[in-house]
Length: 76
Image 1 (cartoon, rainbow, N blue to C red):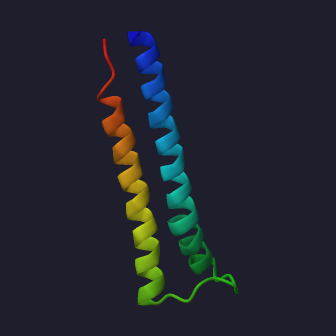
Image 2: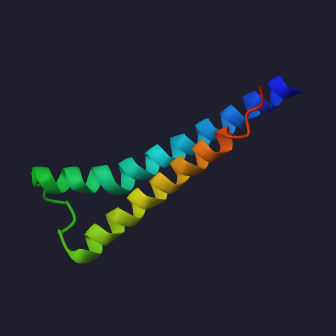
Image 3: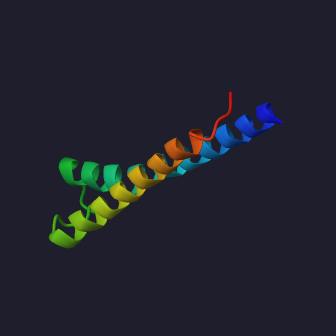
């Protein structure tokens, strides 16, 4: 049962980390890249836009930390 538990835990951690990466890319990397390249449809660099991107970044970091925490339950 330990091997099954460990594999399920690793699968959960991988899924959480994948969602975390998606949050960071969609909400932080994409708008910042569009701003830096001067894309016409890029959001205007205002406080609201930057705070929105920061929220997406922090959500991604929180999900990543949740994935790391899930891995703590691995059994030898």
